[in-house]
Structures are given as C-alpha cells and as structure tokens.
Image 1 (cartoon, rainbow, N blue to C red):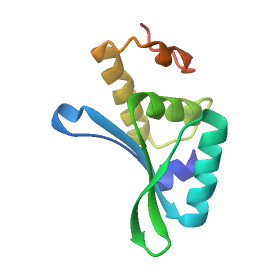
Image 2: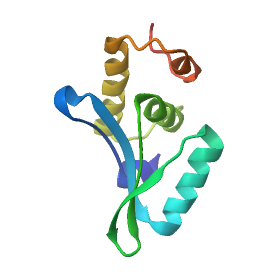
Image 3: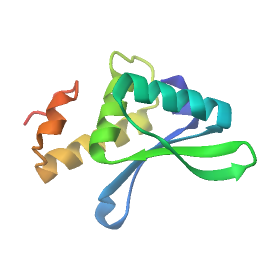
Image 4: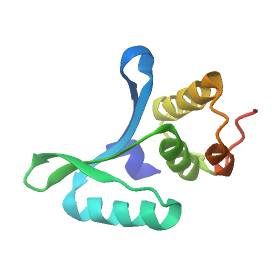
Length: 115
C-alpha cells in the first residue's frame, strides 16, 4: 500500500471521465518486481508504457476490472492509506455501479458493490 501511495497513480480521464488507469512510476528493477507480483497474485498484466529517464518507467494497467481487482487487493484490510487515492478507487466503484456493468467477471472481486 505504501509504495502505491507514494509512487502510484489512479486516475479517471477522458470525456466524462469514462476511462481509468492505474500506474506506478519506478525504476526498471522495481517495475520487474511489481509486474511479477501482480501477475502471480492477481493475474493482472502491467506494461511499461513510458520511459522518463534511462532507468525510469511508467508501469500501467487499465480497465475497470483490472483496476478494481488491484485496488481491492491493495486496500483489503488496509488501515493507513492516502484518502485522495482511496476516493479515486471509490469513484471507479461508483462508475461501475452507475454504468450497471453486471458482467460476470466483476463477481470475483473481493469487495461488495451492492448490486
């Protein structure tokens, strides 16, 4: 949770904030470790999207399902976190609820969406 609060980004963008992204800015060694952890624990693929310096990259994933799965895992039982990032997570939950995306893949998430 701490690494995400410090070097992570959760944002809604585009017209009507329809799209979301979840990313980290990190060096290539941390990038490799994070990709391995998220793939092993949650079967989420992250991609090195942009290089800022020779050894600094933006590690990115998108899509409501991937983002909710990652955030649910990170925030599960967390007691210390940045409120503004947590509120972005809640915005994505609300966006999914409001869009009535009752797709079966959302049922695997460890958070109750009150559907």
